[in-house]
Length: 405
Image: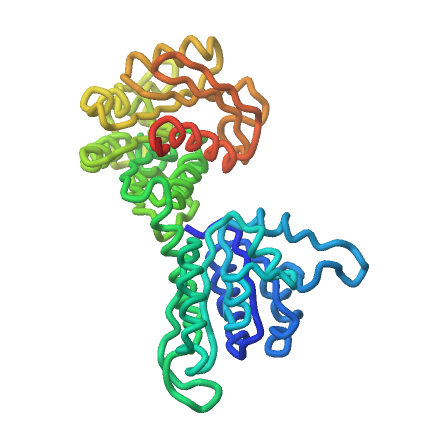
């Protein structure tokens, strides 16, 4: 859920600043992009080298850097998806609450349009002071999220409230923000991916060149948007995230059964698998030998029978509250054939790929798609990475079906 999120960390001059490297490590491990701004006093407790090394970005403390170039606080503030100030001293909290802007971190705060999380840290009497409590209430009225300072042993030797929340708890608070604000939170998605394998004998089979990359990218993105994702996937060596319920199958029959076990309570169904259209009418448990061929032309003739049409079967039973999205890989008359499939299988959308487009289709890191809805509205996209293609697909779904009105 934090993958690709831009997290701005603001560090002020409290001794708890020494704990922030652990928070940075947790964020980076979760896939977030992290940038750090710190007050000059914060650097008395933690070095810029440590923060820069862990965050993979320079630490910004002043409006001009050592080369006398401008550090753009507005640009940095607008870059952030979430701004975390930890530790937040009484001094900085007072300035936040009363509009005082006399350092780079404060300028970032007053320029930020993203949500702000503040983790106070100070001594017991400071934390209990009425002015501090008033300032925190004011910040909450501004829409900031305030973490309570838990009780414990303080740097002064006293014991009581005022400790900064531990990095692990701050990390959980960041995750909670993105979880509760995700557009597909509470939605169930079913996605199929990869090829199927149809057995001829123990060493031979019918399949195709699908790698499953597109379906996996769809599943990963849906999970990052907060969805509960079931991924039914044919044979592939590509791994998936732990937050995806991966269901491995082999044959078209396996995939048909798995889909129909999961489809009933699903909100969005995306059928991206390259399911075999045919399977051998007969298969054998022993390897077929050349000497056993009986054809007069010395040819092996394999009779094929159609597999069950998974997409069509789901189209017949889907409810008006379910979105069904199919894929079409075409070599000619692409738009016409995609529209026929869209109508015939009762889809809400069809994603068209053409093997005539360079860089599209199987065994590529890129793809070029055309999205057609059930009203035959067509949206064309340029060639781009499969990750970006997935973003395009979900942006249309979210805009048309899940945007707040």
